[in-house]
Length: 414
Image (cartoon, rainbow, N blue to C red; front, side, top):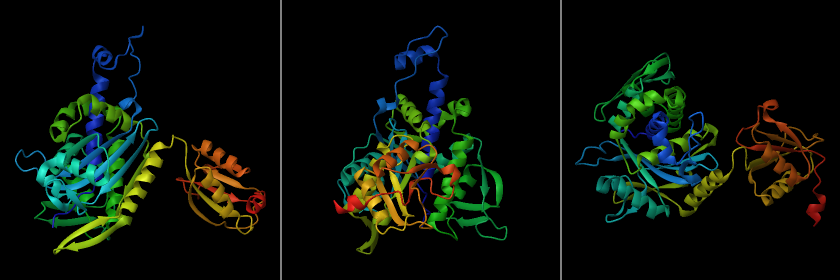
């Protein structure tokens, strides 16, 4: 069976395309830029800032990878499908991977695996299937093939990766799949990976789990972004942009690709939410064929998490955990209820490491003081503590340790 390729490598390709377009946009003369965006020249020759990407409207992208999207005859098979949501107003983005074995209703073909939609009608049919199945409106689609991924990495001069010793004893990562044309032979340690080796790095899953493979793909994505996908390399990206675009099928115009790149450029790594339907999937075997199905409730839960994330302004965190450090029974639950009423999302309530806290502590990631102040307003008390002084707490949420100064008896009796 052919080894599956995780969605992240297609996000890499998408980022290269977008930043290549951004490099081109940054390199063109002032007059075309003024004509395109309606800017006015300043005395020093500069131009007013371009309008916000997509006029600050949220956009949804369908990203697909196949083994032959540019063949001209056979659209090939879709190895991975991902939904990318971008909100330029909040500089937030979210990724949702769609399993290729998901059983859906393909227009004109009935109940099928979702990856079959690509073979029946290419990206457009996948788009229609996803829109109908999940009641979504997709703005743009992007499709890239495996050969394109390899060439893109080669065009950028490769990526330096610290290859882990997955197999132990200095063996690194080794695997051969002749049917899938996959030959992996990577020694451990920092090294420059070309396109073929990079493909092997992100596809390897011989001795460990899909989770470990996903971690390696995150490692590759971070390395690619840090080393290649920034404006310092705009000239190089501009040189390869035309070739990259030739490997990709998309319905984005050049200007829309620029907007996508500008929006993506403003999304920090900690503002990118990566989700999967895995917790809500169930296996099915129908007529001897293996499928997975997702519950409507599960999909709604995932989309609700995405909407909350995208709508939250930078520097805000809605997720809060509450620890009882006062020893008063019910204190954490009462504080949690007050925070829920203030529109926070409650991660958990539990006991703190001790019950002798006199002051309530609100421990927040250092760029989220506005959210910490909202927590204090909701509770009516609390000392704000930046996480740099308490590094053991999670950076994706605010941690509240309830002290004896927290009054909730009146609330409990009311």
